[in-house]
Amino acid sequence: MSRKLEGKVAIVTGSGRGIGRAVALKFASEGAIVVVNDLDQAPADEVVADIVQAGGKAVAFAGSVVEADFGTRIVKQTVDTFGALDIIVNNAGYTWDNVIQKMTDEQWDAVVDCHLKAPFMLLRAAQPYFREASKAEAEAGKEVFRKVVNISSVSGTQGNACQINYSAAKAGVIGMTKSLAKEWGRMKVNVNCVAFGAIETRLTQSTTEEMTVRVEGREIKVGVHPDRIAAAGRDTPLGRFGTAEEAAGAVYMLCIPESNYVNAQTIICGGGRGGF
Image: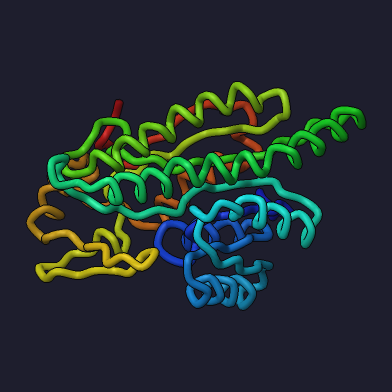
């Protein structure tokens, strides 16, 4: 049986953990070569090891997506190493919540930079390669599609209390997706978006204690009280949180040949919750 992404080269940001990890593993299982990015080297290396052990091919690229030269560096290394770039998934991110009157400029800037500016910078860096590749393919009479999947959230489609920074950034991702799809359609690049609802990750794990993770030198609260998880489950038609693997499936659908005529769309992966 042929694999749908055989030989494709994919960059997946934030793929050392959670949904990004599941996306990387799914892509690799379908034949893609994956550039695994994470803020920290160790998680990226672990995902690469898992892919290689399963017979796939991947390399790690550690670093922060908000660094000014991140996009340029990861695109250059990818193309220099593998001679191609076919898929970009802008997945890296985290939440840093507060009500508006208590939200600092640092909180606003950090979340907007990570979720909105960083994808912009990576896609801007990829444009010259996409342009030249598509030009050469057109001259050769070939139609080759490439894929961009930006990650949004139901917080971006309908807002969420205490997440004005995150909601604004994720709404911006949807607008960026629609605009870039119009620019890049001529290059046969499908630009789409997946907006996630409640997905099981370390950021949403059930806990009654105060838990934090360290991101860019900051201690960020993670975890959700069991009562809130239960309430979210009741409000979701499918009755539960989604798994990282289910979330990865939504991204995968937008990267296979069957999606070649799907462009500028936002798919909500939320179990029936969180529509426009």
